Length: 207
Image (cartoon, rainbow, N blue to C red; front, side, top):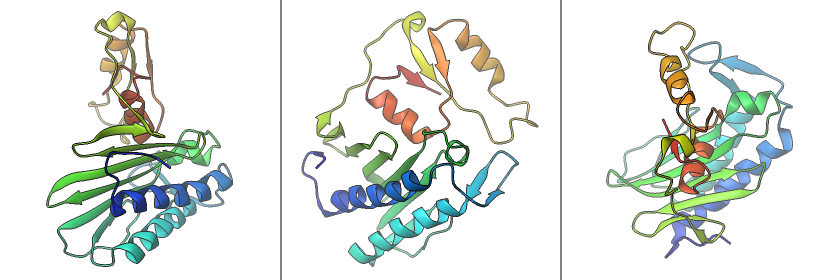
């Protein structure tokens, strides 16, 4: 099990739901039969995005039928002081091409404040958990960010907008500037895994 301070029922459900959705994705990595573009030709969605979200939504509906849900691919919505926020497949392009860098992200917002967050990496079977006031954990081990103080010794990460082909605000100049000043820059294709990497001091920073 994964410790995260005083783990409550919502945290346990988030963990179980993330692992269930992740197991589905792990079993079908690189095997998505249909893919469509959402906002741009490089913003993809597969049938596995929707299937993984359905598993997570069903788990939440069973455990907390009165809670609201905001899903990346649709999900269900209703008014409530508790709202679950789901990205069932963060890193769809990686997943579609068979690259094992994708995650399931689930958060619970209570009265407008994030209370619990889970990022599950199905490929490495790693579950990152954060609870407000209790810290962040990886498989029971409390995490702390890097203490690296020099940019030149830093491994950073970044991402690019889905309209990078068209917009002048495309992060390319920033990418070039940082690359010339630090140890290296990574673009992993999954914001969830990247942010978890910062929490676990695998990366010094992410923009």
